Length: 373
Ligand SMILES: Nc1ncnc2c1ncn2[C@@H]1O[C@H](COP(=O)(O)OP(=O)(O)OP(=O)(O)O)[C@@H](O)[C@H]1O
Ligand code: SF4
Ligand SMILES: [Mg+2]
Image (cartoon, rainbow, N blue to C red; front, top):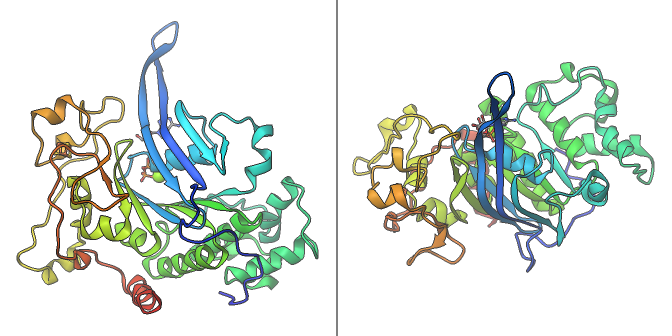
């Protein structure tokens, strides 16, 4: 990637502002299910996202983690207003955008961008790279100094691609390069918030670290806030200052990176942290208990009563079936570390870093970061 970042830096870094850039309160999305004959009527709903609270500070990167089907993408699409919320409130830079119309959203539309998981399907195969990256500027009527083509070439260089490839088509690029095109497109309007929905999970492991590195540079050097969605705790730890753990439509634990990785309180977070790939088993410390989560996430059409995790939780008791645990700060948890559990784990004092197996590329990046912290 080019060292010469030509776009201006945004606001103060790392959630330093008093007011979060983005505040999500009680955000809910229930997709209706229709049935019946001959008259169709609503017979149920997929409770994809249910009363989620979340904040992202200006320049901060927040990870959103959970198993498949937990509602991560739906949350991202609600925030970027690609989906209409069923309930709750989304406040962006002091504006209530929960149900804002296209016209009302227009002034801030350019400030919130999304990077998608699949770099193959998210780029129009019939358009050149130049057209793809230029089109957000055209749609929003933005004419940068020096013209759009010049800006596109700058963006290509910024994301580590050859500006001479302006007229090439997406199929001429590898997966990692296509994701870089997606990043350049997201940067075209100088956003303040990027929702990145599993931006590296479709890429080869060896390429993942390069793209994460690019995103991290963008976040740090341009001060762009990120909501980084992933099911992989290793990637999120590398990228995020705070992490929210989601289970079946709910945020069950949230906190700064060290709290979540070193002092997790929710059983589900413990389970995610101890999910170590097969290859690492030989190296695991003998005294550390591995938690294997049994079964799949239950259906969000009929989620379990009380605590939604109770059907897979080894600590579940009667109360867990009757009372939903609130997301609160527990005694012995740091400020800002919130957990939704009636019978939380004791905070661990020993570091769990060795539980997380990073691929060599990400490990190298972490080591590099540790040296610059
Ligand atoms: N348009 C839709 N209509 C009905 N149900 C939907 C729709 N979109 C998502 N869902 C359901 O909502 C739930 C949450 O889906 P979502 O895609 O947000 O999960 P996710 O955490 O992003 O999963 P993954 O890791 O697989 O991407 C799933 O049960 C999914 O089937
Ligand atoms: S509330 Fe009960 S079921 Fe839910 S995570 Fe805590 S102990 Fe487990
Ligand atoms: Mg998803």
